Structure formats: C-alpha cells, structure tokens
Image (cartoon, rainbow, N blue to C red; front, side, top):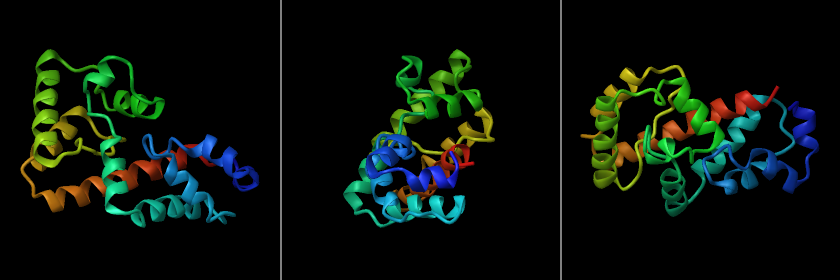
Length: 167
C-alpha cells in the first residue's frame, strides 16, 4: 500500500490491514493509527514501535507470548500466521532434519520454562544454523536481559513486516 492509501484508511480499515503486524496483537496497530498521517514509511514503523515500547509490562508480556515457537508444533500443524510461516520457511525452519527438529523442540521447551516466553528472533536473512546458535547462546542469559532482547527482536520483526507492506 502507498502512504496515501494508508493515511486515508479509517481506524477499522487500518486495523484490518495492519492488525497482524505485531503477532496476534491488534492493539499495536490501533495505537499506531493515532499517529497518522504518516509522512514516510519510517514514520509508520516508528509509530508501531513506539506503541509497543509505551505499553505496560503485562501488554508487552502478552505480545511476547503471542509469538510462536520456532519450528514448533504450531508450525508443523500449519497453524502459524502467514507472516510467521513465510519467515520461518525463508530461514529453512520448515525443512529441518529429525535431529534439528528435536534440538529446536528441546530448546523451545527449556527457553519457555526459564523465561516464560517463547524464543523470539527476527529470522529474516538468517539460516537455521545461525538461529540455532543464537538460541543456544540466549537460553543461558538472564531473565531481564532476555526480555529486552526478545522485545528488540519483536521491534525488528515489526519493521520488516511494515517494510514489506508499505510501498
């Protein structure tokens, strides 16, 4: 969509078009809409990111928990959003060997048990080997540090998704 088309949408149309940018968290688009008209694609990205950063801790936690496991059960069952499915497939996470799948499953379980949220990484441009290495590195981090890292990764994902949609 062009900026003119985006800026012309009513609130409901905006949320329909962009409610999925932040995984299962339409409230981000609802809040970002208040910053229109956007002067540029970067201004739109900034509005979405500010909406996330201005949210309360409970909302941020819910946003983090809305993300799917990487190469997890939802992916295998075909239950991911179109964005998540495309992103994971682009990184090769839909083509794991049985050993790789077992390793991702074990890390997903350990990470969630430790941090209470799924492991989140913006997978665009990364290989499954790089993602697995990041996963193994981050699973031992502190809770505060990992929460900040996960939130930063969500902001990157939001940027990538908006850049794909805004012409």
